[in-house]
Length: 401
Picture 1 (spheres, rainbow, N blue to C red):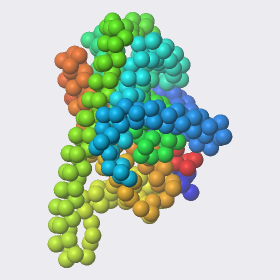
Picture 2 (picture 1 turned 135 degrees about the vertical axis):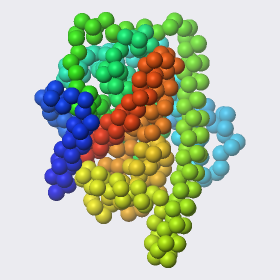
Picture 3 (picture 1 turned 90 degrees about the vertical axis):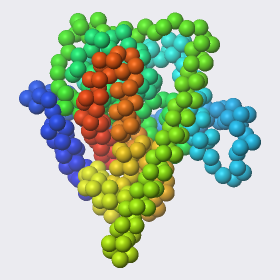
Picture 4 (picture 1 turned 45 degrees about the vertical axis):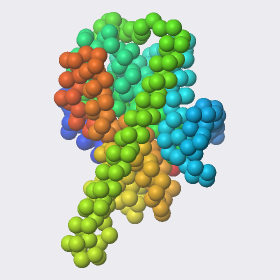
């Protein structure tokens, strides 16, 4: 039954994208159908086949080993602050980002990542009906991050038209960076993280192809592909990536403090008002209310209706704050079915939230003032599309959970 509901859900999510389309007549449904089929095959492979499960296990083990090595540096600096038997989120979850970021910098410096990004981007461009630039950017975003990826495109930014810029930024918001994946592994099951990363890569193109359909001139596309970066020594690069990783950890930590405190405040205020109005008969708060709003959408992903309000609350929390806050909330909810936990977990693995509008537009504005303003103007449409990507990925993953 959940598969039938999920299929209906995918149709609804695609229809919502079509409502926001800038050119409905020129949507190329053959590419969308192909990418949806690829998503289904990949979800089945990663979640249900022995080879796929082993691959996910290998990735999880690899990140587990890296996190262990990261703890050596963390313990040296912060070991005295650790509380015995207690888990410190900043130290255990966020600080390993510094080490993972350094490794990414080394792979980038050795020209290993650019080769991987270009090869995968070229292959994906053969099935998505878009240009190599868009395909390159989607893969690069999943490795470098939603703001860092545009540094590799700074020479091309002045020449990228608005319609292509939307697709580039949509891909960036729909994915997550490799440096932060290890942190997710400590909060939700690795199979859901890996599945979400892979499905979102194609989901971003599906939604962008509906909301923002266009054809790319191949000659112009070749002219735009240029991934040259500024020349740095090895230790200049290493220092830059280490500091970038620490900045990410601190920024995420600061946002968590602010958002969780605000949500707690809203829960208290709204809960107090509801208790007063109902005479204490209703034990609802702010998150309960947004859960009711998102419950129908959660149900359309194949989540049982009995779990839909709690699941919808977590989904909405992610949209209003960020994925870390929502993952923390997911860990607190008791009684959710395995399918609900799995579907919500996949939904949470993306940068689709309100703060990302500012992060992406700010990153681009620092490189090109005019293009940054363009992105800010279609920010809400960007968030709408990226959120639909999360819903579709979660729904398809739910077929096999």
